[in-house]
Length: 205
Length: 207
Image (cartoon, rainbow over all chains, first blue to last red; front, side):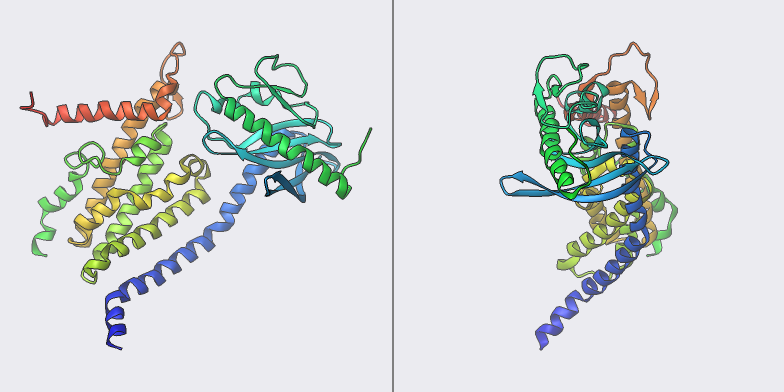
């Protein structure tokens, strides 16, 4: 009994202040978490509007489960892009993969029949400045625009301006280029299959 | 307690951290942010202000409870207090300055283990009254912020030609990209430390 008394005597301040600090954090979190959530959504919306400028609104259509192989599974949120008069003008979904320094998170936009990629943009890319970082620049990113929504291939030489399934890598940033192309490949096909199964898109020949 | 309110002591508490005991240039503690978040002035300033906020709050709270602290549980109390304010700071940045929060990333939560804050808690706040502790926190935090901004200013100008986002060097200037990478931080910091030690005459008498 005296031991419990001793413990309480020594640690009461820790217990009491943990309670108060916890309370303080709970209040702060409750007050600001809607704003934080709103910021996240605003950022995704900003990227999605950038990729499909004609779209006026986006609605979350589905959540596809992606099998990355080796038992790894992840999810991809699929958004339907709607024009001003409520027609579907395309789809966007998020993808991620391991880059050279950090996780690469991106948004991939496709046209309404899922035949061509409309563009990609990065929600998070923290690669080496001057090398992997250049994936953000239009000359790399634009290679994805209008590319067929199928398997993409990374090459070292070629014409970045040509619209085809070949993506010309960034000099000095092989890991980043590979990561971006691989994550696009990992997501595009399963998302397309998922959407065909769900009847969200029709297979047009 | 009587000498606590005397003017010289208060002034001393406020100014010590700015140069004589500058955490970055003179004491060389808390060296993670000066190397990691000084690629541009804006994130460096945000980091500095976050540290000032955490330092002032934790110093104040610890100073108020200093007579209740048990010697062997004090570090736990310091960490608990610091972690609380760092979390508040992190939430604030994420809610109201999302751009900066994204750039600083993990370095905001890492303020918890920043040596400067626990050092001021141990060396000052757990021994002095609230007024001295708060002034000390402002002084040390300001010194740290100034150091971060100097480093960030030099690196930003050399790496991009901009300062706080505005072009300052002629367009003919070729950006020196390595200044944006970790090597740039180490080189700049090394040169500044050398300069600080020349200015203070620290290595006088050394052949």
